[in-house]
Amino acid sequence: MASSRRTVLRAATVGAVGAAGAAASGLPATAEERTGNGPRIGILLYDRFSLLDPTGPAEILARLPGATVTMIAERPGPVRTDTGDVAVLAERAIADVRRLDVLLVPGGSERGVLGVFERPNLLDWIRRIHRTTQWTTSVCTGSMILGKAGLLNGLRATTYWSGKDYLETLGATYVPERYVRDGKIITSAGVSAGQDLALYLASLLAGEQTAKALQLAVEYDPQPPFDTGSPAKAGPELQKLALRLLADSQV
Amino acid sequence: MASSRRTVLRAATVGAVGAAGAAASGLPATAEERTGNGPRIGILLYDRFSLLDPTGPAEILARLPGATVTMIAERPGPVRTDTGDVAVLAERAIADVRRLDVLLVPGGSERGVLGVFERPNLLDWIRRIHRTTQWTTSVCTGSMILGKAGLLNGLRATTYWSGKDYLETLGATYVPERYVRDGKIITSAGVSAGQDLALYLASLLAGEQTAKALQLAVEYDPQPPFDTGSPAKAGPELQKLALRLLADSQV
Image 1 (cartoon, each protein chain N blue to C red):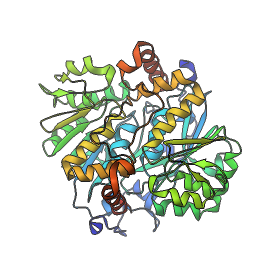
Image 2: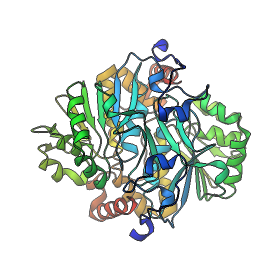
Image 3: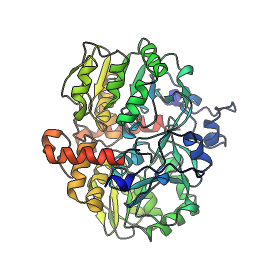
Image 4: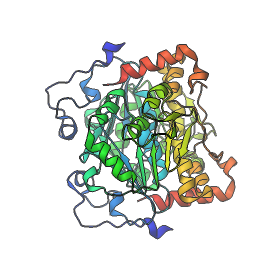
C-alpha cells in the first residue's frame, strides 16, 4: 500500500499557481506529483463556497489508499469562501479535467450558488463529468447546483435544512436524511454532513473496514457541547438566529 | 449586527497573493476588507497541517458576530496539507500579526509538527501572541506545538489519541476528553474535535444562545455510518489500520 502513495517530487513545472507554494524542494508534493492508483476525486470550488463543505470530505477521502483529491475551479488560483475569511487554492481549471471517479460539489451562500447558476460553462462541465463518474456527490446547497444542472430530475435527494422547498423546484424529491443515495448520486445535508457522506463514500470505494479506520484516523467521535444541530432539536427561535448569523457573516 | 460585517470593497491593494484572487470587483471581500468589531481570530498554518483542523473551527468561528478569521503563516501564500492534496492561502505573515483575541494552532503530520519544532521564530511568535490572547487553542497534534513552545507546563491538556504519551513529555498532564480548558488554554482531541472545540469557544466568546444557533447553522447533527471514532470503540485492529492509512497518505 505504501508504494501507491510514494512521493515523486518531479522537476517538472507544477503550474503557475502551484509553483508559488511548492517550488522549493522539501515542501509537500501536490496530489498530481504523487503516483496514485486509487480513486481520482475532484471537488468543484466557486466564489463564496462554504469552507467546511469541501474540506471535511477532503480530509477523509484523501486518506483512501492511492486516492488523489483535486480542487478544481473555473480557473486555477485562490477561491474565497462565503464569509470572505479564507481562500482555498484551486489547482486545476475545469477545462483541464475531463474525467473523475468522484465529483463532489460543495454548498455555498445563496449568492455563491446563484453565481454558479449563471455560469453555463460550470453547469455544462458538471453534466459532462457526471457521465464519467462512479459517484457524483454534493454537500449542503451543492445539491441545488446538481439540480440546476438537471441531474436530480425524479431523484430522491437532500440539502441544507432551510433549502428543502427550493430543492424540490429543481426536480428532486426531498428526503430528510443525513445523506441520500439514488443511483450514483449521493447528496448530503448541511455543511458538517459532508463528513458523514465521506465516510459512507469511503465504504463504497474501499470497503467498510477502511472506512471505519478512517473514522478513527480523524477521531470522528462527535461530542458537541450542545444538541441543537437539526432544526427540530433547535426549535424556531434558534432557527431564526442561525439564519441571521449566516446572513450577517456572508460577503 | 448587519453593519458589523458590511462589505467594504476597497480599491486598496490587498497584498501580493490576495490580489490574484480578489482583484476583480464582485469577488468576495477578504476578512481584512470588512469592518469587524468582534473577536480577531488567527489560525497558524504550516507545511503539512491537517486540512480539517483549521477549517472545521474556521467555518464556525467566522460566523460569530463581527468576527474575523485570518490564516497566518511564516510567509503569506499557499500552505499545503499533510497529504499534499490541498493548499489553503495564508493571508498574513507572522511578522505582521502582533495581537489576537484567539489563536488556534492546528495539528499536522509528524513531519509537519516536527518542522515547526525546528523553527524558533514560529515558537517565539506563538509565545508572544499567547501573551495577548483571550484564548489560546489547539486541535489534534497542535497541542504538541503549544507544549514545545512551553505553554502547557503543568497544565491539563488533550491531543490526538495516539499522541498522549508524547504530550506528557512536553510538560502537560493528558486528559482523555474531547476538549480540555486549563486557564486560558483550550486543547482538543484529533482532527474533527476542532468542531466541538469551536462550538465551546463560540459559547465563551458570544454566549450559549449564539453557539447553539451556530451548531444549527452548520447543521452539526452528526450521524456517521459507523461508531469507530475513538480508539476504545475501534479496537486494536482498526487502530493499526488507521495509523497505516495516515502514514501512507502523508507526503
